[in-house]
Length: 93
Image 1 (cartoon, rainbow, N blue to C red):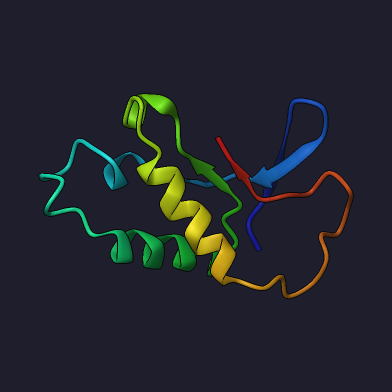
Image 2 (cartoon, rainbow, N blue to C red; image 1 turned 180 degrees about the vertical axis):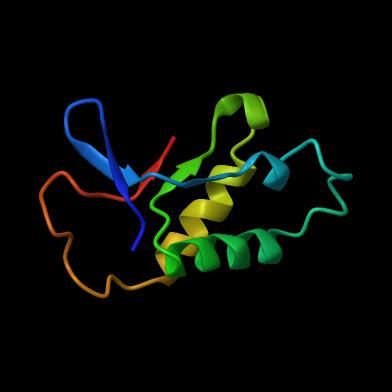
């Protein structure tokens, strides 16, 4: 189980996060980036307990590719159990 950190007004996320910059820019060409691989990476992070995904706008101005991959990965999963507290959530941001 990963340690948790509290952000803002009570949102709890994992102390370790996954930066999604490489899913939208900076590494290789657009043709070389593989959305299926991005989704698989997000699933693995979730399996390891990661609940914080950095999908900052700076990682692909005016595009939502990395956020789209994160959203797709989360939509494919069914929650295994309800969050342990009202403030615990999966965050993208």
